[in-house]
Image 1: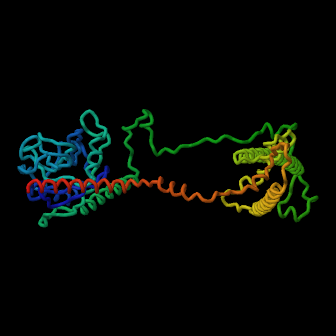
Image 2: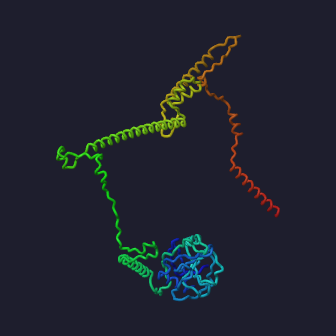
Image 3: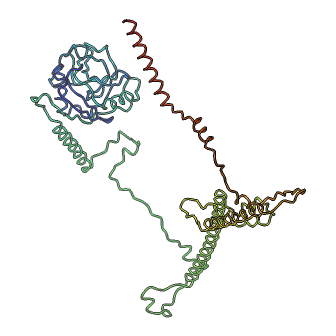
Length: 459
């Protein structure tokens, strides 16, 4: 059973949060040093400089090399080995030393697996809890260089103390004060750089030298020579066409005042351009109409194909297919099937069945049945009245009359009580449950008989 913990901190890293519980009673000096440095903001911005796959990840050195670190006490402090705290699984937090005993400072590590070789050599003062252990495993799976350092090392952004078991710790400087000092230092550096830029300090030409340019004065003004745009050859050429000069007297004064003077050449060019644009627009409209009509025709054709396929699936035919079928010679079977075509699909969901035809057919059948029964009674009477001619033999001719079955009657002979009684005697109902109950009753009777026989023998 693990020992109870007293104290809890949360590391906010670029790989995710790491929740750590502390054994402050078993390792008080290591836990006090860890919490005090966290209160001072010492671990803010520190990277994980060492990763050993399937073994541990290490951090706590502000230099990022693994050779630095300092303790809250001002000097290295001794190890705190507890017999009941062992590196038996992953997620255990221990102090890193310089390879010798009692050389602990600010660096610590978190194990990625069981590490029996660390027993008795390093102080175990905490453990990772919850799902944050997977963030530690994520750091242990990062890509490394040849020296075991991550190529893109994760960083501790801040440390939040959730449960402080040491109320008497007085930090030398708090993390907030340290951040304020750092911001002030950066602001002072920016002000000095801005002041140096305003004074126009001479640049360091040693960084990028161009030979002769280094000897030249920087304040020497640069003069650009502009080319003349005058063309005297064109100005004195008599063959050069001159621009037409407008006669202001022939123009309306209000147009001249508004600046609406338009040359004839400009008007002609504008008209030709407008005509060309109108032609282009008309051609574009024709092409667009042609494309839309072709697209609409294609859509209609596809819709017709879809409807035809849907009718085939439902067992219905289009009008063209029906016309082609009518032209062919139909067989008797097709004619009979055509009679029931109207009623096909009457029982579909959402459609009401028209029962008027069914009721009319039922009434017609009932009238036919009554007519056939009356005709059958008359025939039986005529046969009973008629006398047979002696010496002559009547030839019976079988006539296939579909209505003959309607006049048949079902008669039972009287006086068959004996056969009914015999059938009832022979009829036997077999019930499996009754048979099982009978078998159990027979078994109980047999046991009682056996017990009764044994008692008689003893007597």
